[in-house]
Length: 126
Image 1 (cartoon, one colour):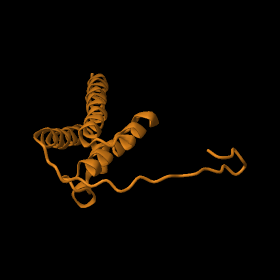
Image 2 (cartoon, rainbow, N blue to C red):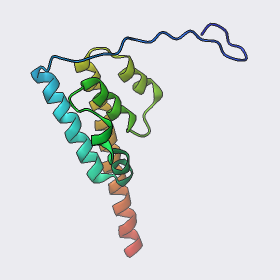
Image 3 (cartoon, rainbow, N blue to C red):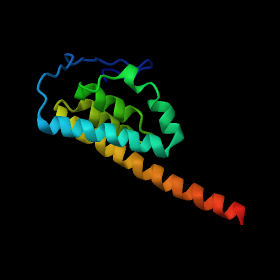
Image 4 (cartoon, rainbow, N blue to C red):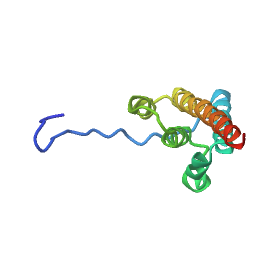
């Protein structure tokens, strides 16, 4: 931030677009786990399912940077610092791992939400 303003004056430095060419076994495993976790959460949470409905058209699953960014962007209730950490990470393995952590948290919240909904539904039918 150069000047607080008003208006706020900032200097932005863009990173060069990151390209990925080396598919290690770890990257492949993390990519598969991210995709699997996305499917799991989508099967539990209808709102999440809507977010990933156009996934194949929006993201190249062979690009770990874009996949991690997409995975982080569709998580709900994530604090901005965690999302920023994904965007700032330049190592594809670490970036996928950060996104997977966010997705895992989303999966646990969705499971809890499903349990709560089932309990409420059960009480309503009594």
